[in-house]
Amino acid sequence: MYESIKSLYDFYFQISISIIFENSDLNLFFKFAIQNCWTKYVFIRGCPIFYILWFVAVYCFISAFLFLCMSLIPPLLDIVLPLNESRPILSVHPGYYFVDEKEYFFYIFWHAVVVWEIAVTGIVAHDCMLLTYIEHVCSIFALGG
Image: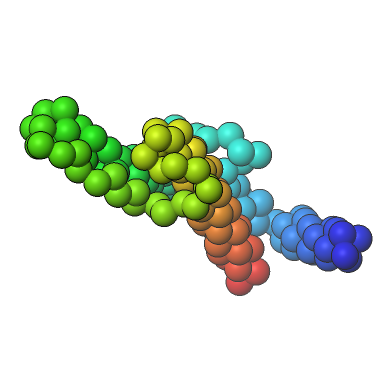
């Protein structure tokens, strides 16, 4: 499986390079390379796509963290506005760890935060790669015709 994917990738790379060097429109290719700001994963300052991706990534990380922090509201309200009895601990992300959820609430909470931030990292990386592939295909189509 790995060899077939590698051979397809090498074939595609050879076709892409041959298209680029057979045409004398290298300036057009480099214009697209600078326009999408991805040249060997080095970001060029002043690129609107870079700032949009940065904003989306920060937004996703902060919103995931704040969403998980909603489960901290009942313990905080027990400190700020205490009642005669404790408020029930409600987890935003129900996890079944086969332990007492009240006793190990904060451990479960921090585990959920770490896991969800890792998941958001994967989602943001997927979106960045998708945008990179789209920009690459657009530049190849611009070179082709």
